[in-house]
Length: 271
Image 1 (cartoon, rainbow, N blue to C red):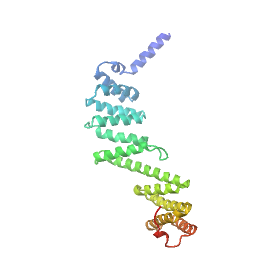
Image 2: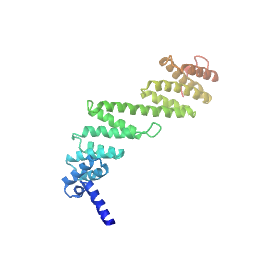
Image 3: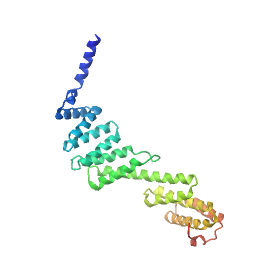
Image 4: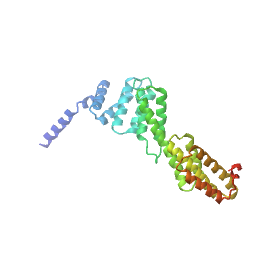
């Protein structure tokens, strides 16, 4: 009885998989048919296993590009984004004239975008996404995916800005004011987010004043001069800022603490 049941189950399973025989065939067309049959049935693991073999067998043939495209999609649907990114990239590199090349380049960038971590973590994939999106927009400025690519690029650039801002914030919080001044300054050279730019300019001036207070005597005056420059730049750019009263108070406090005569700091130089 058990043998009968086992045979029936085996037959049932065999009947449910019409592509199994084709997949085992030595005929390339049969295996191709099986791979795409599995893909259409959303059996992505089986499809991808066959397609990985087909890519090598079709190498140099334009059919390989179509197989690579569906192999990348299968891996994406399996949430194996690293493999999907690799296969989309392989298509672009090996078959740049394929009708799938534009979409593959965009999808490669989209896999990096999907893998991009929160700004608290390593931003390797964010940077890769930015690089690939820029390449896509350069090659296909009016492409099918240009608008989506521009939105993704802006989001990734904002994430890097946020990462840089919070790195500077960390140094500011732990009292590493010299590093904070440098990092806020670097941030201000490229950042586009207005609210973060304002706060970074404020924190840079604050950090510079605090650094001057903690410096040895011979460096206090030149560092106060640098801080005063940041202060005046901030006042000029943000005359109505909510941070201005706090910065004004810090400016006056540092001036009193260091006993800087009015007008003296502006003429000081050095580090």
